[in-house]
Image (cartoon, rainbow, N blue to C red; front, top):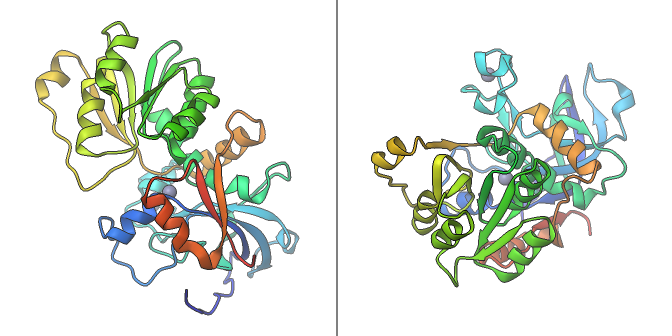
Length: 326
Ligand SMILES: [Zn+2]
Ligand SMILES: [Zn+2]
């Protein structure tokens, strides 16, 4: 914990008093050094909920007092990616809150007014926190994988993104298999609509998926874990025209023999973050009850290490959410 000056809003910006800040698995990648974006020190936290306390020049004074959720990318807004809304792929990011710019593990965060998206009253602060990354990442990954009605979808890893994927793919008419190593998380996945839960600590997940799909394999596999073991199982569970979408990663590398991709016409893809529009869609999905966020616990901001440690040990069923000033 460190005392730092809050940054007053410049033209086009708003000052947000943080009410809730979700703890994402990505924080562990920063902690271990696997993810190094070359900016330090920087305040972590990219799932930010708060209330606008002050507005900069050119921002309507009416926005003061608004409850908002932060969109954590700020692209150049001029390149070919930004022009069509794919700001998350911008090669010239101006800011990325909680990654290369100060984020929400704080009492205040200052962001452009366009990055502060109105949050409906129906979604309480803590429940809203995981929308910013967990739900938006799921929305984006589903669009990349394009699961169709009746297809078998395997979700490896039942954390913040995995729970969103279970609910979204189920709502789209796909058949979902959740794979994890924690009975409590798998139980939650079943509650949220997974058709089958497979405990990879107790059984061979590939064989189980092959069995369930009558040997056809999965049409879509979301890889939210990315360890050597899970990647091998995920790849081996993939069927003809299967799409393997990487969402999570670890220090391990992925190996596949191209003959598998060739003869089964499989695709291997990656999915990162989400667009501003997908944040709006994620908020709408939660407001309508299509997707429920899962909260394990709330912690005062100064106890953030308890949250990180619990995350590291894999103890959390859903998000730990930091609440400043409690
Ligand atoms: Zn995240
Ligand atoms: Zn750009």
